Image (cartoon, rainbow, N blue to C red):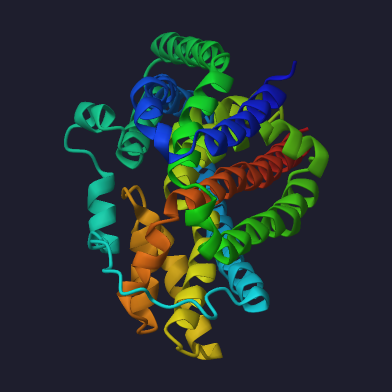
Length: 408
């Protein structure tokens, strides 16, 4: 049976078993079953830094020290990420505007959860440069690892041909080893998915979810629409990959993201599938996907649009067109400002609520179902990374072909 089908079957089985077990059996499930899911997550996470570091070095060395090409890829990637994020917020607002979640629901007097203060753009830039790259690797801080790997990759291209070849072959072989380990780990994915979702379903049974079902429905519908209306054209017209092939190739990573709610945790599988199933080049995926795992937040943008309108409805606040434009602008910039920060979704939402002067107490309403909403937004986030990578990859292939014709 195909691994994607096995994972999907495990997902459905976990929902059925979770609803049958209910909250009464949660202590037993938390003690004996949930740790299996934690082990699976740890196996995935142990490969994040090795695969990003090795693949990125191989990607940079394959450019042959071409700084202009690296700059071109970076500029195109960041621009596409910002555009898709802005569109995602608009889709979130549009869906929420039609469904109008929150009408008739009281604020319930809950206190707002504590939110860390978002770092400034300059703080993000400073934190990107590692003072101790080994410490950054130990903490799995992806942005500093990316910067360190870029320097190492460029430096390798500057040394003599023999040393260049030896180191390129070494990191290339190391990257292949990483992909083989990921393949081994993914064989346990159905068991890990079941163990991860079962306690979530037991804890957040239908009684908890039903009052806020409209918000969940908006997030789900917005996520599907964004994938169909934005990622399908990007992959098809921009990347030259049919939507069916694209989503089929993404299925394993999407279901893993849906279960784990971790963009970085899904990154090794996402990189492997993008190269092997979609045929994207290593030099592009090794740079675009790690960067996207930290700054590309289309799913979070949909969540912001839905939750902002939901909180406004609950508190009886009317949002005008100027407020909506401000949310789109703030949310798009916040996606970079909160890059690599844990709990970035709630931080971004807090920033957006402040920008349109909505009460932060509204965060308490969505905090209870944040784990469920996170499943949708993480899935969209990692899918968007590969959609953008397909566009960048095709553009680079075309440019390389044109350059070869000019040389001839």
